[in-house]
Image (tube, rainbow, N blue to C red; front, side, top):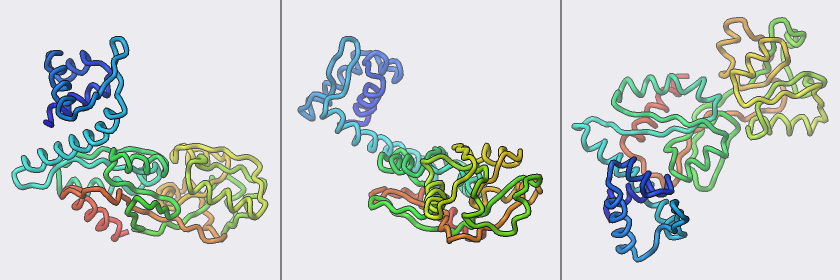
Length: 296
């Protein structure tokens, strides 16, 4: 089994067509066919079924694709690292929910790239569950969560920083007179909050349900910046990790009322799959992350 065979196999699996895969790889079509025939002969299985001009993976082909993607990824990392003349280099795929990406990642990336300028970083947004799937599928190397503490049996997770929450409103909103807020203060308010897939949203809804609190209206958005813009316009109030709104509070664009209700255990966490091989570039990234957040 050779890398070029697996590269060809992966390309056909993605395109569903031998000719398209050949064009992408810069091969003549007979070469692509030979690669697959050799691979099938070596493994003694059929990898594709023909459907007219298209092909689809057989069950054995689907199993091989999982291994193939891992092998090709690690092969690329090895080539990148060994050809870097002794310097630590390579690619890192990072997953994060949007609130963390906006407020914490810029400083982390800046510090890391100042020490490892040849490193490549790919950033993926998603909910906690979406990022968990990406970690399981090895499409993401490292993940960050800014939410309540999460725990999955297949992940290594570490809490790096507690994150206090605060309630914010426009300087022109009547809610600005509150000096502290608990969940009962949300009664009959226009509440702007993240969508249901967010674990932070679930915490707030659970509290409202337990206390039988009923907002006047509920606007749900999956974008932190959009939530802040709506709150600044006076459309309603929101409750968020304070780091998400610190700049707007400092600039006087939002007014805060510290949370005085039941403790909300929101924190910054880092996670990776328990079976993940941590390459030198990933290990150094983890080191830089902890150094940056330790100074906060």
